[in-house]
Image 1 (cartoon, rainbow over the protein chains, first blue to last red):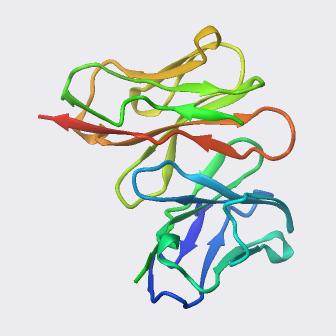
Image 2 (cartoon, rainbow over the protein chains, first blue to last red):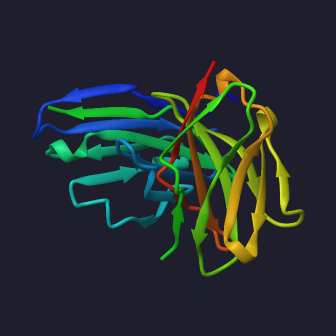
Length: 111
Length: 115
């Protein structure tokens, strides 16, 4: 059990570019979550997968955001046409039930 | 909608002093309650959790928290703070039952420890 792995750790991109983040959960965990954390705030829920099915999406997840979890294993979060307001830490977590294990996050900076 | 309030944005204590971080929640059902700690640039580490049963829960690193239903509170305590406890602390609530255990977090309390 190597924990939840997120890549890359840091990403700097120009406004308007597309970015993709990857999350590798703990293999036994069937639930996977994405959260976004901006400076001075707590994490905010973005979306949730149970196995490969995306079961809930927050209203924070605009049409420019898409998440996938093919085959119920790793997950990707893609942001299209990035905006400066997308700058944040993107956290992934996995769980069996209510106990999460968080990854170290991907810090996105849009310049 | 559920909400979590951490009234103290920043707390400074001296090493060896006691600590209490406050958390109040607004929830329509019996919640799951959590405290997480986050060091700069890192993910969140679970300190302790309350699901049911004994309302005083023990966690890692000498932390404890008490669930008070009548006050909708879940305050975190430590009798003697160590310099390594300096970090940001987040209270979170989740809905019990169902299959989506999404969490609602407070805005966090930044703890500074003076030598």
